[in-house]
Image 1 (cartoon, rainbow, N blue to C red):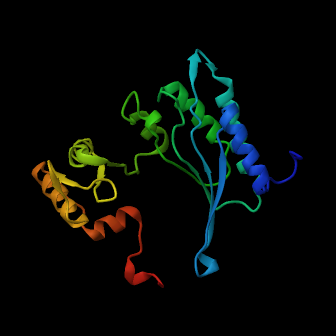
Image 2 (spheres, rainbow, N blue to C red; image 1 turned 180 degrees about the horizontal axis):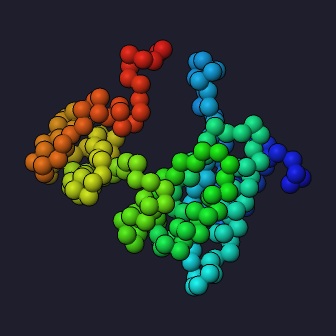
Length: 222
């Protein structure tokens, strides 16, 4: 590939790059297009994640991870046509250390265009995401699901830590010890009671639409 030409990966090139990423520590790049009934509403975004920048000592970092993120940023900048925005999907640092996040943020600063960053669990390790929020802002939501019989206890732990919760039959068939849930609604009602007993407010449907920036059924064409 000529480094002076725009990067336009085909399927074979993308699969080859993905395989190389798995073995060489390269942060993979994906290009995602969302298509709607009206082409004027279509948009594309670049997606990079799992850089896992790892600090060794002083100004030394694990080279493979550095090179992976540098390459992903460079290839994103070469995409033609340009994506509407870029999402970094989490795990910028390996241990969430200030040195790792600063180093990774410097590399991400080379991206051209709008960047949205999602916190990963590795970015959260040392300080519960406080320094990440200083770098990238605190306008994010996080949620937890618990699979199996511990669905409600896990939801309670997430809620008291400031997160959002998800419950439903997709994740657990249980309502309580030895009691199968009859419906999703039954599990949601139990979660709602639990949250209110903890002194927490439950979002209304309109609140949830505003948080997720949804239009609402009245404002779509399907």
